[in-house]
Image (cartoon, rainbow, N blue to C red; front, side, top):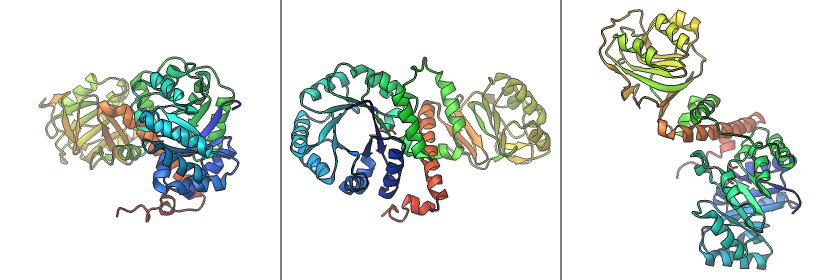
Length: 428
Ligand SMILES: O=C(CO)[C@H](O)[C@H](O)COP(=O)(O)O
């Protein structure tokens, strides 16, 4: 191998889309094309066969993730046209040895994938001794969503095995270059290329980063800053999609229309029209927080209005959510701070002081605890449990990327049902 190799991983389930995306990835500078595991599960060896037919001069990698029957599965992939076949490094030695023997027999290289291996360096050296050709330092997609990093895994094994190392798992135009500097010979890139609207441009960006790796990014951002930035990039619908269609509050309207709100919850429980605790919460909240008020969905009286909203602006509060009414709508619109409510009413209540700030509440059908993340836009408001915030934000970004590519394919003249092969994938 000369120079780092860019392997574009086609992790889709629709073969015709995969072929087109593969074509664009090659135009952008991908050297190898991978039939991703979802594609192989969806289309079987036909996926490998078709990719080889379409791209006869390109190395085709079959990401079989072989766990058993090493010989049979390598044979299948090789006969379908694969040049490299992936086996799980965590599989039993007998499986790896059989895969290696079959690789020799059918003239294909064996790549051992370290995904989920407990002692990666030890296992990398063992599978090297068993004869595999390539080691993949791979952090899986679900693991990436929880913050696991393929560069850490790569650093652990780089320089300690004598066969080429592939790096895989969430690489992009920044981190692919970092992976080269950390010792990767093959850069396996999926989502950053294949979900881009302009696949060729995305591949080119990664290619440039591989060919001219820049300086390693220093330091890590604060996790909450990272989560906020991720949530600002995506929509409320992207987030509920990432949560398996859960987390949406019901019945809220955005008073200021097209606004975006992201922040951590300061919760308020109170009774209809009692505005003492809601307004006191402004002084409790920190810059960037969202005040979430359960006012019993009262429609006849509002615990919130323009003066409270104005105070929030002074404190840098990100927005307000009220299971209940709001008034001074025209003035709030002028202020532009995101306010979401279930109703409007000109009646003010009384500042009696019932209820409390900072306890778990129910708001618009959802439980909200202090510190949970609240994201709102014109489609509505979603609550994300604080423990899962990073993971959901990452998953939501993947949803958005996927939609970017689907949108591009629709723009080229297709329809949503055709792109998604809806009829084929209806539940049987
Ligand atoms: O094998 C895979 C998942 O198991 C992927 O192909 C690999 O992780 C690369 O994709 P991405 O860049 O999206 O992580």
